[in-house]
Image (cartoon, rainbow, N blue to C red; front, side, top):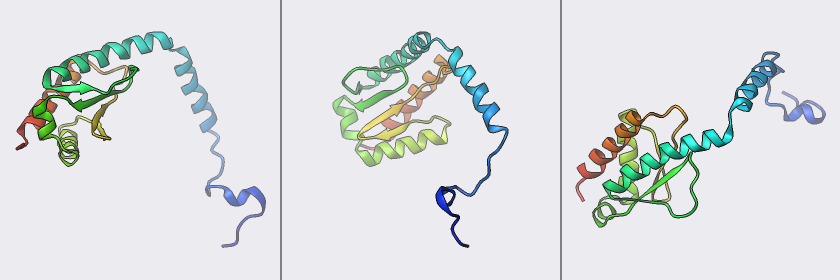
Length: 139
């Protein structure tokens, strides 16, 4: 197939979809209705609960300023540092995924990203899963 002339040759192959603009507009109106300070306050409460529970398990928080939407958990205790090499952290992440618990493994830390709808029950499930998976591995 020959290329189109001009900038049209860079198109992704699709044509404009008239429903996208109203969908984007509605989505932005939902986002604009949020009070960002309230959002950050709620996310900080959730992430603080995650951090407190994880510290009891032997994790350390990634140092530096924190925002509510991301919590970095590094193996902090000597026992966890022995058990959780990078390969094992990936294995734990995969095992948790099989339990319906989603987190990312990045640069030697578990990255947990709660949502506004995350409940304490879900955080407790995460912490229970971390405890069971991290300590079930032979160190």
